[in-house]
Length: 181
Image (cartoon, rainbow, N blue to C red; front, side, top):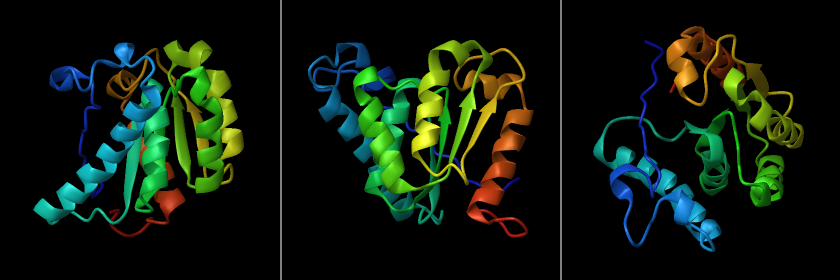
């Protein structure tokens, strides 16, 4: 209804993509940086593939991530100028990734919608605030959930979260009054 097309990309190492060349994230020890970079490139590759196969406009898009995937989403945004905004749900990058993720957000200067779940507040508030402070504060928002929930499941439990996000997206990208890409 909002004029948005959604593409869900399960990161390498999850679901059916677990294998010797890409184990589950719990087994990424000593390969975290390389595998995170590969997942970030997968996001850009997926957008190119959608562009090649469908009439969907992928010249401007939003990358969403939850928890530890925030690191990869921010890295993907550095790889493709078509990433116009980010949705980071209860971001929880590894402690060793905090500095690089903050530096990337500072360099990107892209709007970010930080959605913090009530059940994730204690674990993600400190890094959410640090990420927000390093990026485009004027265009970004930090939003707390009004209902219990964790990660992306909070959107299922509170339909108002999607409305709040879409309203922010319209304002951040200047799409009010015209169909969003």
